[in-house]
Structure formats: C-alpha cells, structure tokens
Amino acid sequence: MSDDTAIRWMELLPNLGAEEGEDWRAYRERGPVRSAAHLWCLLFGPNARLHLPNAKPGGSADRRDTFWPLDLGSPAGSPAFSWLAEDSDPIAWLNTESVAAQAHSNLSGDLSGPAPRIVGHVHDKAFAAEAARELALLPRSLAPLVEVLEPEALRAPDELLFRLERQLESWPAWTRQRFTLKPRFGSSGRGRVGGRDRVDRAAVRGALPRLADRGGAIFEPWLERVGDYSVSVLVPGPDEPDALPTILGSLEMWSTPSGVYRGHCGEVDSRGRVFSGDREDESLRADAAAVASRARSRGFFGPCGVDSFRYHEPSESGDTQIERMRGAVEFNARMTMGVVTIGLVRRALPLVREALALGPGDRRGFALTYHDAADDEWRSRLQAGLAPDAIVLDLATKNASADPRPVLVFSRDPETLRAARRAVFDC
Image 1: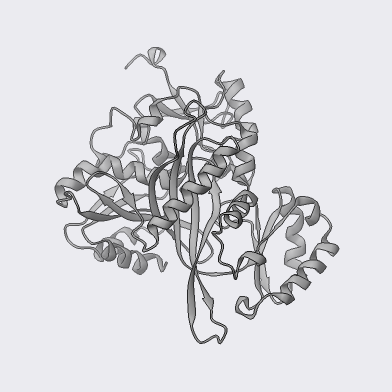
Image 2: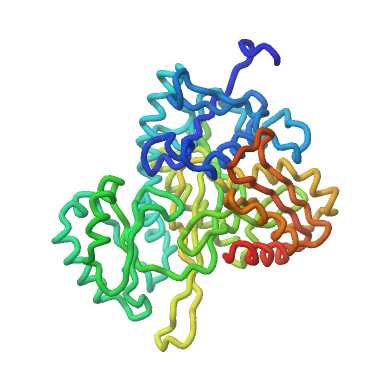
C-alpha cells in the first residue's frame, strides 16, 4: 500500500464537540479532544485517516498508523468492529449540516450515517427527557421537576424567570431549591448555569441568550451524583428492518463533580463482552436498547450512547440518603468515547487473555483514562495503587506532543482499579 493513489481511503472527520459550535474548534484548541480523536481513529482499518476540512489551506489528513501506539504492537490489519468496514463514505464523529457540506465539497461524497436533521432531533436532550418520561426511567420524585425550555422562552427573560421562580418555590424540600439550566446541545457539563433559592440572578439572565442560541435548555434540580454510566448501542440501518439494536457494551464513566469527562472503566470477559460491573447493569442495558429503538423510529441508525447516573436524594427527615438511578439523561446520536473504549479493549484482548489468565467465566477490570498534560506524575500514582501484574498500556501516539497521554489499564481485580482511580482523580 505504498502508492497512496491506489488506496481507497476511509475519511474520518473528527468534529468532536461540534454540539457546542464550530465543527473543528475543539480539535484545534483542546488537547484532550485531539487525543480522543486519535484514539477513535485506531478503531478503523489501515485505510482510515483523519481529515480536517478547512483546518488549514488545502486541508490535512493523517493515516491511522500515524497514531498507532507502540504498546498495542503491530498495527492491526482490520477494524475493531466488523461494521466499521461496511462504508467507504466520509464518517464524521457527529453528523452536522456544516460538516456534511464540507464533506460534499472537499471530499466529493455524502456523509455516512443518518441525515444531520435526524441526528439533531434525537441528539437534543429534549428527546432523551421525553424518552425517559415515557419509558418510566425517571424516578417519580424527579419526573415532575424536569422541564424542557424552548429557545423562544429563553428570549423572554422576565416572563420565564418569574415562572421558574414560582416553580422553584414549589419544589420538595429534598431538592434544597438547587437548580441547573443546561443546554440541550452540549457535552461534559459545559455551558450550564445554576444556583440555589433564586433563579432570577445576574448569572442566569446573562446565560439565557447563549442557551437560546444553543437550541434551548433543560431546567431541573441539581443532583448529587454518585455514579455515571454509559451504554453503547449499534442501531441497525434502514436496510435491516427486522434487526434489533445491538448492545456493544456498558461502562462506568469517570467524571468530576461538575461533569468533566475523565475516562471509562468496566469489566471484560474472555469473549470481549464489556460490562459496567454495576448492580443495575442489566437494567441499564435494557433501558438503553429501549431508548435506541425510539431513536430508530425517528430515522436514526449507527453507533450511539445512552448516559445515566445514580444520585443521592435525601429522605423526608433528612437523616438518610436514598440512592436513585436517573435513566436516559442523554442520548448521544453519534460515535462516543464509550464505543472507542470498548473497541480499544477489543484491540488489547489477546494480550489480556494471556497476561492475566482471562478464561471462560472470568472478568478483568479495565479503564481508559488520561489527565492534564501538565501533570506528568499521575500515571505512576495510578499504577502505584494496582497489583504488580496489572497491565498499563501507553496509548500516546508515536509522535506524541504536549497533548494528554491516555492509558488503557487492566487489572485482575476491578475493585482495586476503582480504588486506584479514586486516589488519583477523587471521583
């Protein structure tokens, strides 16, 4: 494959963070986003390359093998999932109108996957809220308190804030009148604003125009999260009308208290099946399949993720904490870091089977994570909390720069890995 002109390239358009505005801004400005895009590229076959339309004059593209980490051995000759080899059209992280136009003009092709209009509809957090309500995935104490706000309402601040003030006053005592307004299109907790006791405050008023421009907002109580979870699903295409959504895997997400993504962890068996290890894992997987089926009825297909979280709700007396699960917080109508994590675990599975004696009926813990580039000691602190035979794979690219250096970790005991995580990330 030395003659590039003879290669049928699979063009990847890494517009991670496109929910928040310009397609390529996050890739250019945020090291963790670039690292995530490079990891995504590793899931594909050797004919894949990252293509950045308009990133600079003439565009730029880097082959998958440019990013292949030394710790994964020789570059794989096939994709991590068979369905990633089915399409030669340009593939975007998130199908937006603008990236579809760029693919058509710069690559002379239409985007693989559903139309941006359909993606935009089900990627909206309003779709997830509607699905959670109709599928009874919201606790009864929380369901009446979650409200979807349209952009037009946010552009009439006096009327809106007066109404929200009255609603806040009627909330039950367990909410402590703590609230959040989060954008209907966004990720990792960015763009939201909140407070306590009063909605009509300068910070909230100032955020309303921005939230309106982002497609509206969700008004709901601020909850004390104790666990975040993600289920990755593949929704069949229109050429498979009788096929059902396939669960690719379920994971626990590592997030800071403010919702900033720090990685994924879970458990893998000898067949490469991935589970979160949570006591409600089977319910989470079933609920995600139900939400994905609703998205399919709206025209969506392809990889996606359904996020949920467990939270503490004080009892009426305030003396105890009740754990509840909030299902289908978000439906990510795109490739996700959960799918990337599962794919990379599959890449490393032969090594794990041998080094950690992973046989039928066994499970091993794993985590994909990275930290700020400025902290060059966090990996050694993480490894210090693991058993001597733990596997720590450096997934930094061959031409590693100042971007965060991700690692994929495997441990015989999943709980040991979770404890090491908490010692480093405090989450």
